[in-house]
Length: 322
Image (cartoon, rainbow, N blue to C red):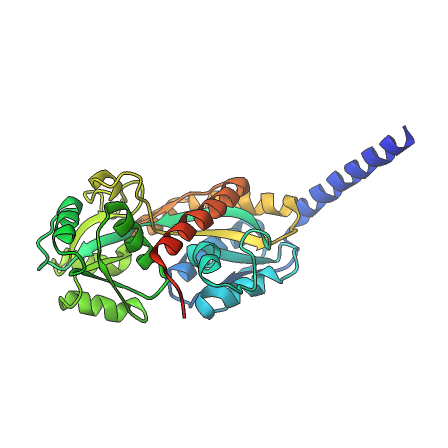
């Protein structure tokens, strides 16, 4: 009986302590580590949500860009930070699903070393072709690729990029043979596509939209499960004869493992509210991204699912990074 009372008292004390932490948090500035350069899509989303968090919680939330090694440097720094709620990390498909499947000696574990807080948004890639290619739909592209095995090239921003994974998944599910032409960054690849030196690309709507609107490229479909507001007339690959196809980018907030659940709950509440505000929704939609705002448990499951799904694509395609 005495032991039961002690356990009960300890549980009550822990609950009171957690409640106090949540009520007081944050008491000083919070940094959000972004593993990619300022001005890119990751950075823009980070700055949008930190503005909302600063306004809602009365403390400054600061973006800290720590770039290099495809996101690994920033992710490791965040994983090793104190688990006190004052260091957050913008997790992305590269840091939490692609790199763990490509790099043998990754200095962090995407699940064990982090606590998921909220999946913020996902973004579509657009499947587009050079106008000289006689394909105006996904079925036509598939038929053309099967009639010309190995003769049609696709550009990507490099080995292991989300664009390559989207293309390799497409190849696997359609049983076609498109040849990969990797570039160091997408700018040169896009220039070669516009010049007709490569014929196919999977890339962000933001990068391709100006060329689609000017008819220098022909958009065939988007890679997400649902159509996107930026291109509502464009079908998904799944509804174009490749059922179950889904690819793209996503972003969410995580903290170092061991962060008090009370702090995670505060952050989750405010992040969900942030990504549902009209100005952020409009900005995301303009970039062909969709707001999500998940629970911590849903985000944890999403990371595990993406690790398994993209790992399968990488293994089957034999993708390696030198």
